Length: 478
Length: 129
Image 1 (cartoon, one colour):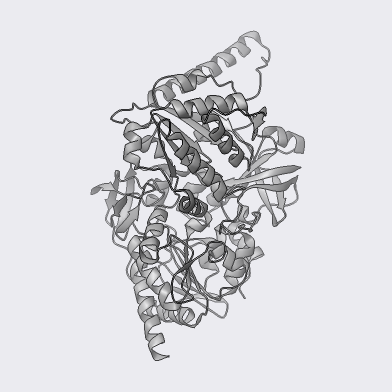
Image 2 (cartoon, helix red, strand yellow):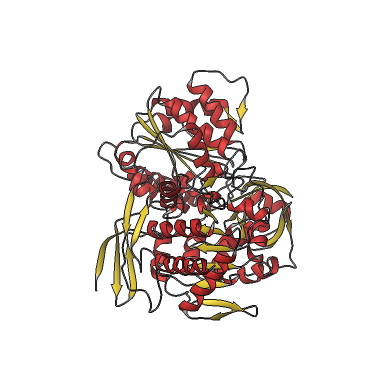
């Protein structure tokens, strides 16, 4: 049974490149070292998929030939006056490059999914700058890891194991054994309580409320992990220290920390639901580490303040570098959302929300970003590549998206594909098609082709090239 | 009951979306609302009861789930997906990013109603021109 080593996982921004995929014939039958999400993709990608393009006729989606679907798509895009081209985070950099060429050709707006995840982070990085590094440096050196508004256990399941707390670095040891022993103690305590209940034959009352966190957790030697979030997540259970901030109060807490690390005093008792004493302990831990890292998730970008929350986080890390070495990194979601930003930038100068309607690239998120364009009902057609905005956009934006002709290129059937006018099932990038993707720390990695796609299924790149060619033919006739 | 609505990723929802969004397992992972156990007591609802969540932007029926990571009274959590996105604030405040966390919402038990499947939800809320 062929076992393919060092496969890069096409699921999240971690881009774990150590997977071992077992293949029987044209089918993937095993995915060693994969997380639950990755295994879900590798073992099930082929079970729910379309095998032929679809075109909407008389209100129904019916099977069509690839040529017919290409022609129909090119007609829609060539005749539109303000089309949007959206998605791009779950495909290869090579496909994104063709998408940009197409957007320029038809004078459309091209936007990627960072517009609804780390778009505000990019805006803030333009303003403040960013102190960052690669995940390799963090793995070997970071002795303090902070996750803020991020739940890696659920969204990036192997992040801790490969890059932070549970990895064996050159200068930092893994905290895995400590975590397992903590789990063991908790389980023993639970068993003892149950035994005592049975022995005494009465209900023992145990004090409820959040467990008391010891200061020792932050002052001990070794790699430490702190989670800051609006709710207690699974990642918070693993952390040495958890800080629960009130929803939409991250900005205040970040600015309070900036005051504290400059040895300022706060004349209030709490900030964002956190006691000042607890914030002081947190600030001490930030200043006294040797190499700290702050990973921030969409908990910061999606809540009130948006890019201003990121301004405060970037500024906090900049300030911390007066005292120690500290870096910051956004936890990117889709496997190539960082790559989409990079290709957009090298082609147009801007990372997302690029408008070609004037004949040159223009960038003004809030105006040229897809959710805003849809909310203002300005677009008249759309091309969606490897994304599901009907599931992921606010209702008002979706209502306006589905009103106009929509072309979908996606291997997955999705709510977006059932509302489309033309659907292209494409090859799965990283499984049936090769390409390049960028990890969350902007390190490019190759995606492998492990199995052949079904007959007549093309890659995103190939479909886009053919649509572009057809659009050019239509434009040449005009 | 007035609550603050958070949306986000869960491991179940992430895994099931990769397995296929039209499966019942995906609906079970995304058409749910994690509520603090004390809030569930106050609403007199049990695990898997239907609850209606309403914001200024929409209303949807999902299944109640006891949050294992409390206490967080007054805060409810719905995983990313079409159900959550009926409820979120589309305003981007000139950043391109809608507000998907910390949305004021009303939570009420609705024993007569059931949550919709993904396909029914899409067809109920959106129409082709």
